[in-house]
Image 1: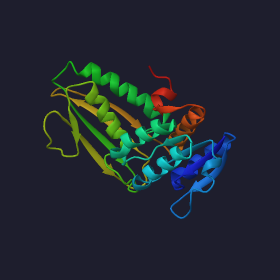
Image 2 (image 1 turned 135 degrees about the horizontal axis):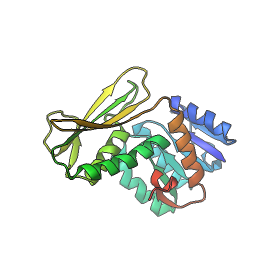
Image 3 (image 1 turned 90 degrees about the vertical axis):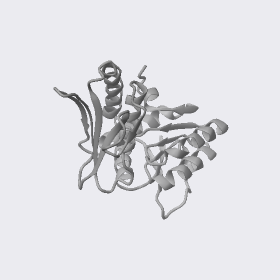
Image 4 (image 1 turned 30 degrees about the vertical axis):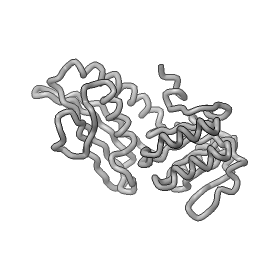
Length: 234
């Protein structure tokens, strides 16, 4: 499989290493200093860039009929436009706030627990996410996905970074600390106890591996998908 890497920072280099280990070929390493030359030779593109580059990267791929997997967060106000463009071009597109297989299992666990806890209003929910200081967006896309999973399965209506937010808003404590790979925790607290679920990443390898699995799955398909489709979660 010929892969275009859109974004060649730390994450792009990990994706490259694992892709080569799996027998794939890298035909483009796109950074801010070079062009899209070579993109049309790719079977699929993987975008781990920055928020203000993601829309252009995804648009370029869809216009060039190259399936695109994007793990860049912080640009989702334009997600409906990218979905519309994919449908217009009969393209193939997967966005994921987190491609780690473990995190996607964590998403499923989070949804299930939210459904269970919705019956017990003595518990209030809060979240914590910790990332390295180079991460540009806060809260993380993964934290937003977790919050949305709770909102869809409970009486909560939104999330907030304000600890003094209204009662039906999920407070997310977003921390940025040197040299950490990422931790996400969900707490259900009452006056008598606390229930916690937590995912801790040990390296970038899990995110990179999952994005390559998604890219392998996407080739030959048409439409807009998520990791739930890739992993065949019902």
